[in-house]
Image 1: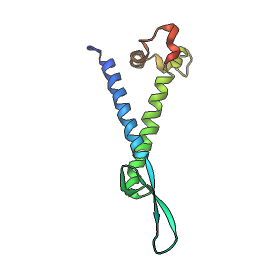
Image 2 (image 1 turned 30 degrees about the horizontal axis):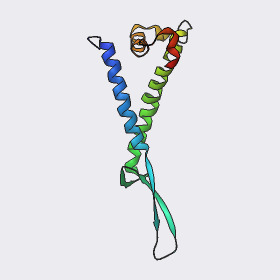
Image 3 (image 1 turned 60 degrees about the horizontal axis):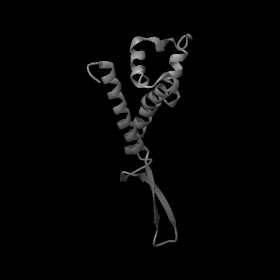
Image 4 (image 1 turned 180 degrees about the vertical axis):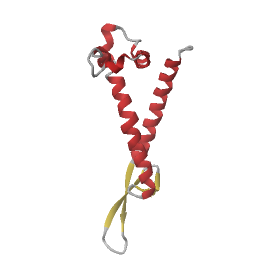
Length: 126
């Protein structure tokens, strides 16, 4: 990576993306505990968080985790993934007024760090 600060930033964002994605998947993980009432013939189940069965899936303690993970998913994970997947298409259509923001130097440098290692005839792999 050397001394290129944009390449270092791109690498840090990619590593942060992976960590945040793992955390969001952890927060959204749920399991069900089946229980049987011994005194009566009733059975049922309760949904709990997979990583701490003391926290019910619909409790107020879990609500803060769920909302934070949902916001991270909507405002960071999804846009970043779409930006990387469709970065080549955005650069190819940057002559259109809607996609003219892709020609800004910082965005172009940021995208080039991810897509520059590929040759022009093999860019469909990205």
